[in-house]
Length: 478
Image 1 (cartoon, helix red, strand yellow):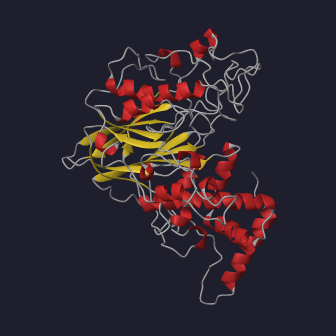
Image 2 (cartoon, helix red, strand yellow):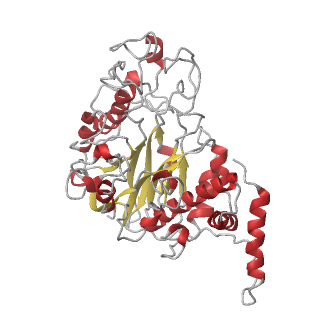
Image 3 (cartoon, rainbow, N blue to C red):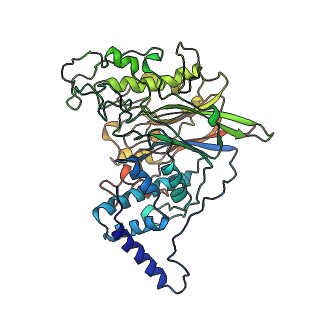
């Protein structure tokens, strides 16, 4: 992605001239340099959120460039888009700026103390933090607006996250095998350990107002699928799908991987991360909550492998919190062991799994959400996260029509019409409130996710994301 400097310069110049012609305004032409506000005191009942931001881009560098745009540059692009004066390339950039601003506005509205962000691309290794730092500075630290491009709604308070972490990902990390069985090994995107056109696509990141205990953080990027208790080589079970035909030379019922491929195959399509956060207590001690984060592959788009992998990516967490399976949980640092029996945890992320409907294996997600170690009030009980906007999405035909009859429409978290995004707390956490940020037509913030003037569709990734932020509020004071 390139920003055409001539178009952008003209737009900025027009903004400068407007400021100079206003005698009551002093130095209105100077670029605004946002200051990251000092961290606000964290409420003893901190919101813990998961949000698939849909910040997917053709390259990681595209996302970095968009995040590094200053407030003045962003506004010039958006104003030029409104006026219809931008080039085709700058128009595309302006639409991305609108999307990022709206996502920032959602975060500023809900004000989580901790947020896992799926589809926040990185360099693949998680060592380059340019996009993450620039998002915090140029978007989250700048007041956004509840009415999106109209800017006539509520001016939202900036939000600061003192701590953050980026994570390596298997997406776009090419393997030497022919994992997609197209006859050519070692080719992106299908032969990557996790589907991706480049290393770092579809990665995830964490921001927190609580300290992240990085010394005790565990990642399982390299954990082998075969090493999970109960794992078997997936077979071709989707046998009559014209959209996902069986590869040449293979038949219904065949094993998807060769023995050599299965020996090497990684379980996680992105990563599985245990990130402890440290919660200060009034007596000077700290309470630890383990954030168990992942973004399993969707159980679609193939002949059955993805369905099996999605289920086992969820099963990983079931066995990890139980600690009673034969699985040896060896992390990327070589440390072994499951989660401590008395640990407080939150399983979170876009799990691509609805417990009641959809194409996935419902057994795994139900086993997790109904587990004895999970606070079931916040999964299937009265504290299950819900919204007023999701039922409207189904009723208005904006969500996928095939899922119109979902049993709990208020618990839907994506325009697919499914409950795919989860924040699942442990049974030893007291949950006081939960929610899905999805404003209905009569609620403030609706334009942050539904605006027919933006993009091709006026919803989904065009305006912010095709997923919604899901959050819980936990009583974490002693």
